[in-house]
Image (tube, rainbow, N blue to C red; front, side):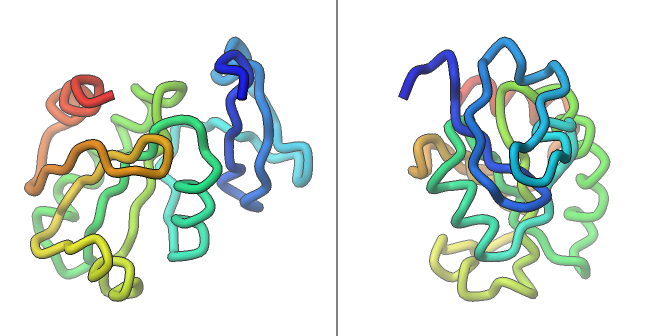
Length: 145
């Protein structure tokens, strides 16, 4: 796997694409559905999309485990969105609703929300619980990349 052409999972159709690293922030499109691959947006993910990103995305994957009834989760959502733009070529940003994906939350031992888990190469490399602002979230992510 050449580092200069990482695999990136399409946030729209889940197809796996190889993209030259210099094109990650340059409007690269999916070879299957032609939608943008890197948009600087948070990707809502159910279990199948989550698994696909962890198994195939060569960019680190930052996952926000959250629930709609959680006040701190809702208050952190804009910061997570802003961080997705800031880190758009450095990491994928996924949101997993723990109400909809209870088995996934259980498998990753999510006991409080929001919990952020950073994965690299499909393996957990860092975890933190609690709401953060965008600058702290970006700094924490970069520290752990």
